Image (cartoon, rainbow, N blue to C red; front, side, top):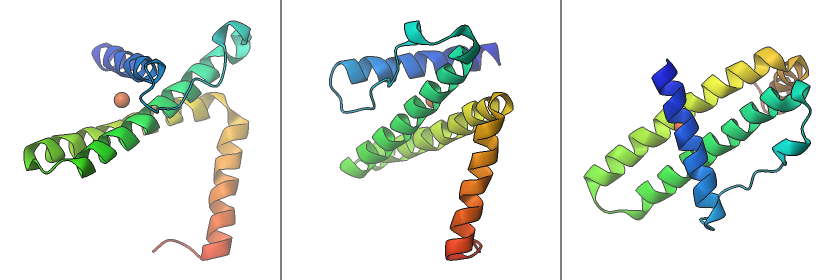
Length: 119
Ligand SMILES: [Fe+2]
């Protein structure tokens, strides 16, 4: 678990480093120096989710860009793993942010009311 978390942190930091070099990924929307101690962990988790979603998007775009089937296969597998990381960080965030948990359910309910339940 510790090893996995270390990997995710490196992965996340790597994406923000890519961002700093202008690779078109999301910019960190907040200055962590300005965040209160009480809010810091929630902001860390939100940034981690953003980074994982950027990774999904990047890997899927790269996979779509190559004709090499081996590279495509590995990139799509990596994208799938990043989606798991989104779920891990989201689960942690929802444990800490009850308002987010409630509003996530509210958003799902609104879409289901508008479009019907997903089959
Ligand atoms: Fe990741």
